[in-house]
Length: 198
Image 1 (tube, one colour):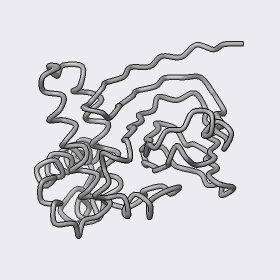
Image 2 (cartoon, rainbow, N blue to C red):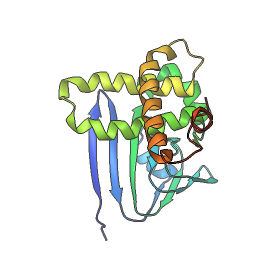
Image 3 (tube, one colour):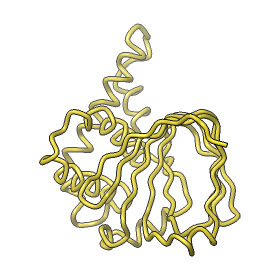
Image 4 (tube, rainbow, N blue to C red):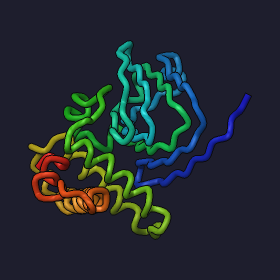
């Protein structure tokens, strides 16, 4: 029995960025699936609704807007309500230089200031990608990896490459906060710094 869903995909120089709109669904990827269809890919997911995730027998609830990192080699179950989510698939060989940082983040949500930046960055990408020319897509792919590198391994010597992207995302976060608190007396530097963890 099928169900109505919608997906949009962008091929980004060996990486895949996907927007999925689907009704309530419980998805399971077992070890048997992995053996039948091996894929050495990392996956970063951001949902607009909370998701119950079980990875290798550890279960946790991921709030809306918080990215989480998984490997397609893992046994995985996601139980989510009707959702609009973003998923970034990255082949292992494309990010070998940050494999240790991805391994540390594996099976975890990125509920940190830098993790929030990844979630917001992927949301911005989803808005702009429909208007990007095909010849510009490889450059976007490089910027995504730089952003993930800076967020997961900020001590890495290449993190400076992502600085402009981080600034762009922080500016968008500030705009949203100002719009939200425009009529509030609480709006000021203290509120913005606390909300952005800076």
